[in-house]
Image 1: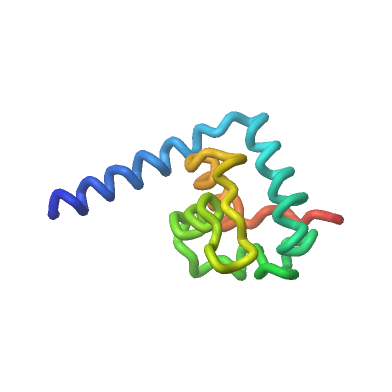
Image 2: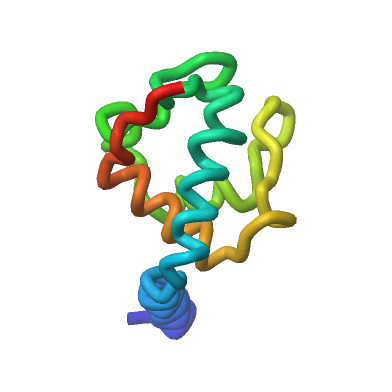
Amino acid sequence: MRPQLFALALALACAGAAAQDVPAARQAELLRLLRQDCGSCHGMRLTGGLGPALTRQALAALPPDSLAATIYHGRPGTPMPPWNRFMSADEAQWLARQLLAGVPEVSP
């Protein structure tokens, strides 16, 4: 394996491990942010609105790192803002994994 690819693989593995270390209280805060703030564009049930649906089915084909990068950095030229002022990269990874696992349906 080329050194650059090895370094990238190692960095991604470390990021994934750290993403699982999000404290329970912070997990609750992140889920609240997802349901309230993200829900304002992606729909209160996360089934779509101004932004696309964030359901497990809708996100199934996306790699976790890609989803986490979108959460953390936003999407320039679209209404999707970066959330890096409100969470760490590890927390964005954790949130991406939650979305891919299927966040329980939320009532508005």
